[in-house]
Length: 401
Ligand SMILES: NC(=O)c1ccc[n+]([C@@H]2O[C@H](COP(=O)([O-])OP(=O)(O)OC[C@H]3O[C@@H](n4cnc5c(N)ncnc54)[C@H](O)[C@@H]3O)[C@@H](O)[C@H]2O)c1
Image (tube, rainbow, N blue to C red; front, side):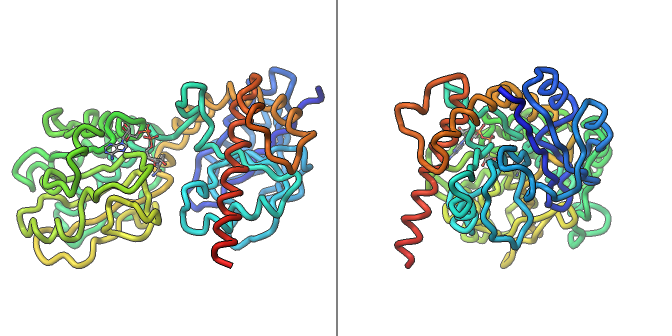
């Protein structure tokens, strides 16, 4: 089998420094002799272009993937460049954010429909081990970073500049130690201002993001007794929850699969009046445009240059802000990329088989009985999911027509 050429594209999103492949994992792929790797130059990426070149990758121009050979899977992380509705005839490995009916999902997936018979989306969010566990996820570092940004926002809002002060632009940290040191330096002031130790509540605490958030609070110096760790058992009684309003920072880390009662709501916030402690909500789950978002108190995603958005309509209690950044792990881009790419590596090693196996049936859905066969199973399942989601989109389009 001729080596498979992987094409690492640049990331469009401002402040996105992470990378799906790292020089370490690229070298491991190249060492097998079964891959060649093309890397688009990207000044924003945490890894220098030269680091990739040094391990044997070929460097090409920024944003040149649209003219890559159709046989080269395009590897990336987040959204493709905006304001482009052109067909996508390549295989893309990325987080496309269009399988959970997010805003604009039909337009996104329709680009691959228009790219048939060769187009394919292997969505990174849905690559699964045989036991249903996700192959690779940024969750741990998302929760860790989210809790950090929430604590920094709290420190700003209770700090010496007064309660109108808001956390300004945040920048990626060189490493985890630097981030912890920065937050620790501000916690003593928070405690002095509140007149007590700060309290955090994490929902989804048993998941990847939740574990990261809890670990961050511990490492930053929150007392264990002041970190409420909730998961399914605690929310099964249904919301909204007074306990959330009693915490200073609330970090939501659940994996939302269906409509559930809201965790907090404009009504529950109003009812708490000036008895509310809650000043910062970090919605790591970021189901901002999902109609079932259990935190219906904000409607936009925030960004690294403006990390918080105020909750409108408060009539009592301190100001309250929401952090809804959907690429939190980029606060620690090097560690987060290395962890993600290392987890993805075993699956990438089976990609040449998947691509060769799919070749004869391009443009046609995979038969159900073939999905679970072979070492490349993970990609076949992703392929089957693509066809299912495309059928959903087609159905929705015909309903709307
Ligand atoms: N903002 C970001 O930068 C970012 C980055 C990575 C992941 N995410 C998102 O974070 C979310 C969580 O990802 P994960 O990898 O940690 O998922 P996970 O499956 O590892 O963990 C989710 C946890 O939530 C719990 N949970 C689900 N529903 C709940 C409920 N109703 N009440 C209480 N607990 C509940 C589950 O039991 C589980 O422990 C996903 O939506 C993911 O897309 C966001």
